[in-house]
Image (cartoon, rainbow, N blue to C red; front, side, top):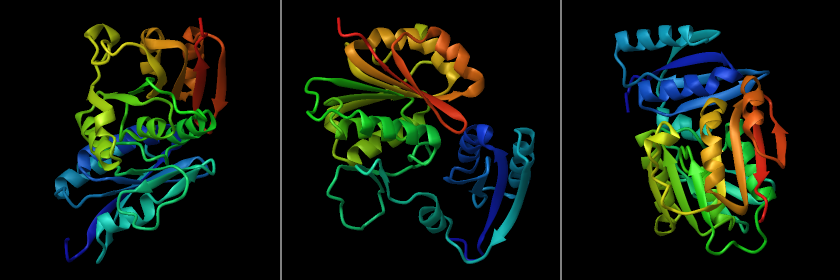
Length: 291
């Protein structure tokens, strides 16, 4: 810990730009970022402790060019950034009165209902972002009352692995394939699988940029559930391929779709489907015909 304290960067951005700016800040600072939303404006708070003065200045000026409404830095005396982030950024919460999401460092008693433990590491995805939260909500709403035996789950763009792990715990399948194009996310997913004692029921890997680049999950057969919480731009390219990987009667959850991207995604989505509108991003739940 720095005995003199830490310099923090506070960035206000429109909610639609928050995920891109937050991801960029995480990569630049090599530390987690706090996210708080008020009236459509998201405040991102990042520690600059690992950056020198010039690097800090470049980061502050760069976020302005990325659409930040305001970017200021301030000195926080006597604080440990990790402690501050853990206390304010990610705490235990309950999804639809059933599934608990618990930080790794939370030592309170275990709940009686299903739960998973998550360490966010440097990857996006704790359930606090609206797209992740909506996917978790749907996984709880549609969880099978009798666990699906022999069913495989694909978490495409896994981030921390929170969605795939939740699907496993809720019984949507008994084996998970989790892929992401970010090595840090793949590492975070693997560690969270180990944290929940599920490594033996899963495999992880890097995903290609496009379907034509080869696939780490192409030899895994059909999937009972496919979760893709990415962006509309990515989904437009991947939906036809992912749909072919879905077994008859299987379900697909698609999220991270902005209002601007929604029409393009809908044009290639097969029916039937249900649409779930959120503040800024949208989610689709699809069921493949069972024949």
